[in-house]
Length: 165
Image (cartoon, rainbow, N blue to C red; front, side, top):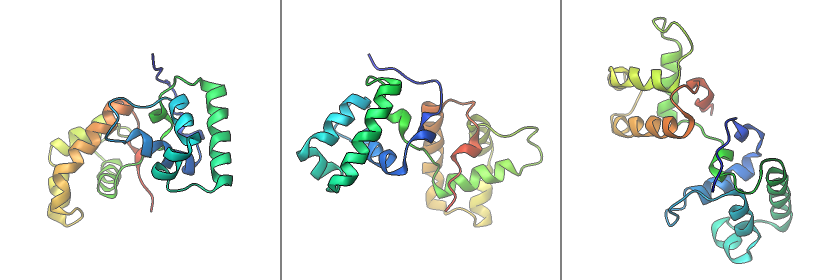
């Protein structure tokens, strides 16, 4: 049985480990998200480490395994690895979130659900019309926010997912 954490633990994970976890979580050959124990075993396995992780340097592998051991000790090995992936919105969705955050009609900080509602009410189309967003992105942005809502909940603060690059 896998366990889902009620807190945002991804903020406590290094970017390097988050990227590695994301590779395993997004593996199209897996039917379920891996647990921390499963990811640790895959990182430790030389064959998987070489193909999936792009030949980690031995020192990097040691630090990744050490970080995984700390997470397993603190949260348990049966916790889903996906909970430790740092999630950020794409550039297009970040622009939508920033626009929603600056909307004076919103009486409080927007949640993912509020942003999705604004998108369905025409915010995305407006930004495409203004030239802020590429028309080709419009179809994928709704699916992207639906994914975020599914994973983090409708009440998650949208600003937490803005990508700053």
